[in-house]
Length: 191
Image (tube, helix red, strand yellow):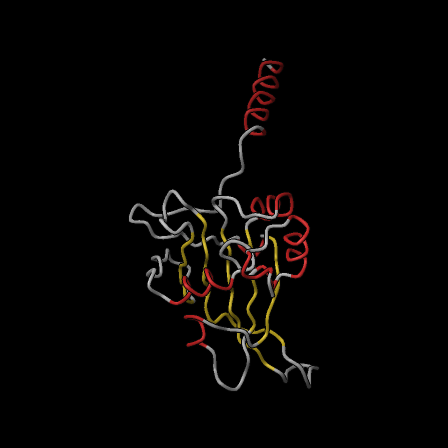
């Protein structure tokens, strides 16, 4: 009996080992993006200070620049490093945090504080006619509706993204990958 249980456990382990990892990209039945609560465990790409733009800019106080922290799902990051392109089911998370300059032992510069808003950019050409879509979660972790395609984020990313629809120009290590792989958008490569 013990041998049969060990064989069954080994077969079960082999079955699960061959499965593809669960995608971070999930939608509700009505098409809302499910908040990926583990996004802070994904690959961290970069932070910007005072670069807030788009819908999140409305949440930023005038007296303190916000931090933009960008994360991408692990599988997409690995594929980008291999190919210089973003695969289907890529999801970026933009976490906008407020800043403070005086606190504890810090008397200058800025450090991150509370979350102001979280947004996502998703690549899924089977779901979105333009391949890419944007979602705004705000401060909530509830499923988010797609931001309408008339919003400026769509035209801005299309016109200014260094690779595909994304701002790889702000992710120094990935910008080098794109240069080496020759995947920079022609409009950006001419800069």
